[in-house]
Image (cartoon, rainbow, N blue to C red; front, side):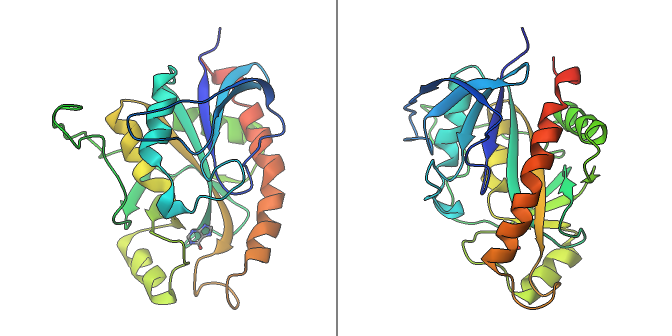
Length: 247
Ligand code: HPA
């Protein structure tokens, strides 16, 4: 039987309609409650656990997501691989593209960002994070994206900002100089926490707007929502095409 994979969904993906739901499970973790009960089901032939990052009713803002509880809960039910899906602003990529980034720059602050918080629970360790995403899973997603003929970019640096406000134009210029291609609010500490638990983790970044100062006029939630709606089909197509390579 294929290995079960977790999908952590962001805005607009709070419920994957294509998922055939089998059961739900409420998980309690030493770090508190995850954003929602875990939903077990199937996506085609692939067994999946789905977790909506912002809660079932999309009420949890990026800086208040309990990332530690989410990642811990998934690991506790035997998950080894996580696909994180989230909207982003494009710094070097235009709206409409799905990027599978290969790097991260973290600008978040004040988030519970590690499991290394008490020697009783976890001995001090310094995980290698030179390549923050799992290459094996990235390559499965890239192949699936090509098979599905969706517009993908196979690399890019994800800049994680604190939110919930969007960035200033000057902040985006700085991020550009730093080497960021994308900007989003939820990519960290999710990726680092997954690495601390030795989980294979990759990101599907859905570019829904030009980042601040790069498009015409202000960024509106209506524009973001409109672009996001256009992605739902591509995300389903891409995930549906993973089956051939999924172990
Ligand atoms: N900035 C940060 N997060 C985002 C953006 C953005 O422009 N668009 C979607 N998520």
